[in-house]
Length: 368
Image (cartoon, rainbow, N blue to C red; front, side, top):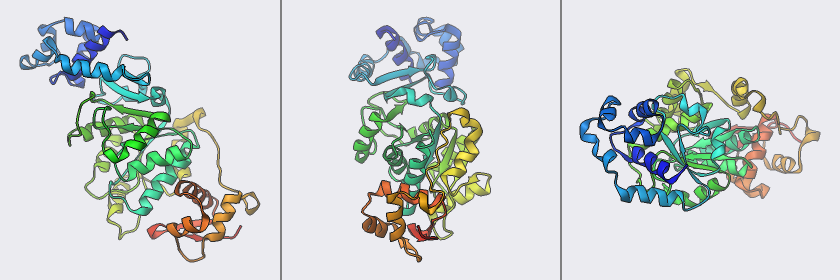
């Protein structure tokens, strides 16, 4: 994309009166961002842009444009991915009010790979965080990219699980990509850039505002084959994402929890409304098999018998009691880090050697 083309696109994107719908009408009528701007007020009115909102199209803010250009040219892994670009993700084009362009940092080609969105509460329980990490770590082993929103709680755990599992993850952000929100996820964001992509429809310099996050959520669900809600209260942004996913024709999955856990009530509500109840990563893979087709990597790492246990799996199985054993206790006994232990426990569960219990505990079902 030439500098003039970039400037034209940035003018459209940063003009307050040009949303996705009006922008698409202009592009369909005039083929390019440059031609849409050159078409003038008559064409802008025909696209549904009110007269009072023409000023930014006639005289865009040069400081805003230059700030975005400076960010885009500041590193080789930054890109403005426009809706007319062949690399723009095909699944996202399908949704209502698809963003006109995405600011990307990292490996933008990741957006074309099959994705599962994992979302949930910012104030998740310890069990919810472990579930998000373990599901993400297992799903990336089967070729899925994990997409989430970089928020505290379940989002962060899902991103970390995907990376620790050796896979890729995409973070859809509610700010410009020149800042990280929340700030404590700065290190995580740097890891994502190395093994995935940061994505935003908001130009550099855009702060975190409440109205940005529902807009972010439609992209999150739109990119994905389905959305897994790990934990959510009855009034939760995660439920908005699930609703958007259903409206977009995506699969909706939910993990059930204890009736005494308020963070499980949103998931239970989704299940009553028709979301698919999942207990294992294999449940998700089975439901998505037809959509994954040949891309699916059939790689079940769970041991089929005691003789097939790995050294790490044997070590963990030995330190699980017949009575519920707390996850933190298993970390201390096994000497494994949280991500490695989560992956081993998931394999042991899939093979029937162990079972999770309320409160993040595990019990041994049979010996290795």
